[in-house]
Length: 358
Ligand SMILES: Nc1ncnc2c1ncn2[C@@H]1O[C@H](COP(=O)(O)OP(=O)(O)OP(=O)(O)O)[C@@H](O)[C@H]1O
Figure 1 (cartoon, helix red, strand yellow):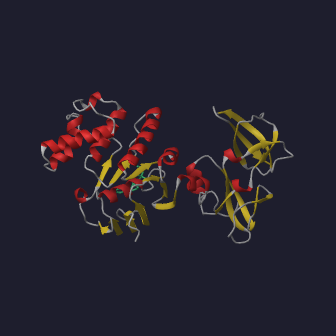
Figure 2 (cartoon, helix red, strand yellow):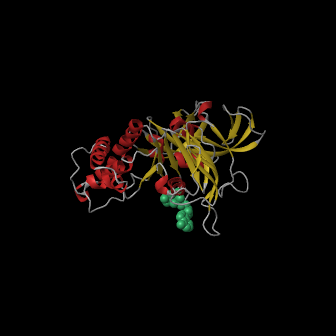
Figure 3 (cartoon, helix red, strand yellow):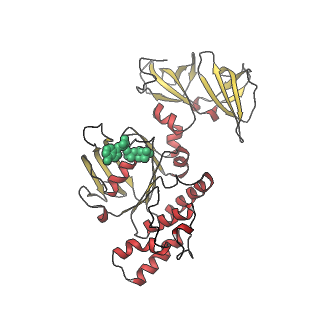
């Protein structure tokens, strides 16, 4: 086995009573020193994975390994894991120093060691000099950092972060994203971060796991996930996209919107129904004659760095375009794109496409 692996899930299922499983036969490995993000809609099982790793709950079926050792039945306090919760769970009656020192006092460490470790943890999160502050005197972002200091003071091998930024406003949230990423690099430990915000996941992670209904739909680097989504669910969840039904005619040849196009994909059955994805920023506005697709502009919005155009082709497909060029509502334009911009995905059964191609 790869000795960089720190966490391994082997056919893990978690089920409550007779309800459908909240995690369904999930297997994966995570490596030491990387920043992982679990991304998916509410209720898909993200927190359940964290709680299984932390030891707050046990799997119904399957095994969980930590550094190659089976963790089933090992209590939470015996695992080299700490959690930062969404609401920080700080003690309001203790000051900053005592909040961070709490876990060390329970372990009966001597005063000098506690002092050194707490100061070191506070330095790591840029809160030197705040030792005697009360929690209610700290801002949201500072409380967040206290919660992180309290977790890293125990020197865990893995830090679990359950939507830790969701209570912060957008500006602070962006700042904390940089800080957390930087902190993970400096500490060199494994971070497992839970979010349902795809931009946050793309910005921060070495690797993203996209979850849906208790299963991992796709895992990969942010670039893999963004550029090569494996199916409609991932493409849709990961960002604004044009997802159009089509048909793979042969290797490197796909049909959609009533036309045939050259693409870079292969290995499908002849005439296999597929979904194709083209990102809005990969579509270029041209004249109708030069375009590979002919569309009519339905609406246009100025988004600061680009215009966002909503267009329709003759087959009624909607095309979202991000462009620095402007067009007029009602104008007939062409859209140009390279073969590499077309991403072909195997069709998955969803409510929308069940019963054949639209
Ligand atoms: N103790 C429990 N008993 C029964 N069902 C539970 C229990 N804990 C969690 N669940 C169910 O498990 C499913 C997955 O929950 P989980 O908290 O892992 O989702 P999540 O992806 O973290 O969602 P969110 O983003 O909303 O926090 C949900 O449908 C939830 O209702």
